[in-house]
Amino acid sequence: MGGWLGRVIRRAYYVPFCSICDQAVHPPLPSPSVCRLCLSRLPFRMDREAVGWDGPFPLFATFFYREPLTEILVSIKFAGRTDRAMALAPLMARTVLCQGLEADAIIPLPLHENRRRRRGYNQAALLAEGLSEELSIPSLDKLLVRWRDTRRQSETTSLKERLEHLEGAFRLSSGSRLPAELRGRTVLLVDDILTSGATMKEAAKPLLQTGLRPVGLVAATGRDRYRAYGEAMDQW
Ligand SMILES: [Zn+2]
Image (tube, rainbow, N blue to C red; front, side, top):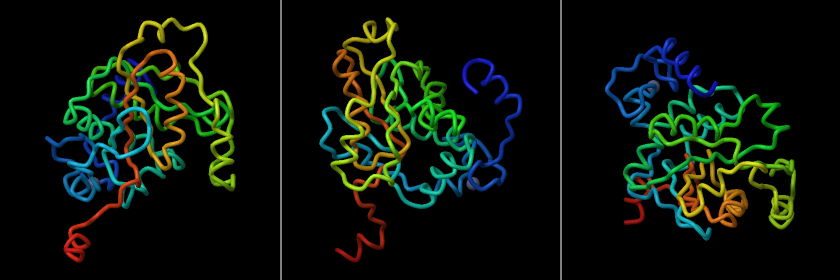
């Protein structure tokens, strides 16, 4: 639930339990609903938050795409654990602050309306809403629209096919004066996972064409290989 009423309800029912392991949380912590132990297990990218990719704008990721984060993101998307999106948002906000990113608006990557209705929510919009609360930057979750209902990526066979399905899949909502008002301004384009980056690039096209300056922010990407301490020592 978004907006003012959502915030009031969430605060009224807020219990200090970790939304990952259900154990009690003892603040102060970077996220009020991630306990110290879970925090220590999350695969933070730390000094590697800037993602090396071939897109036309900078992109940042808070985590590596690996356990236990993989399971957390899956549960947000497919098991209705929307609370976990709100738990991760403050940790993603930390990336924005540490990287010195300044944005005038947050734009979540939209789902097609059919899929959003089936799921009941857009996980990217939940992350954007949490970021908006943390950073006091408005989240504009109606501005960008996914109007082509592309097939699930796993159902398509080749990369070429996937790219064809994506072509022109996003556009700005018609009749809004906001895009013109945001011309020349930086907007955070937010998603949960970045895989090939093709969706992020395609979603940014209408923003770039209107003169907005997107900066990508995702919870996780597996684009750069994670190197745990042990692996690093093996190669040393
Ligand atoms: Zn925990």
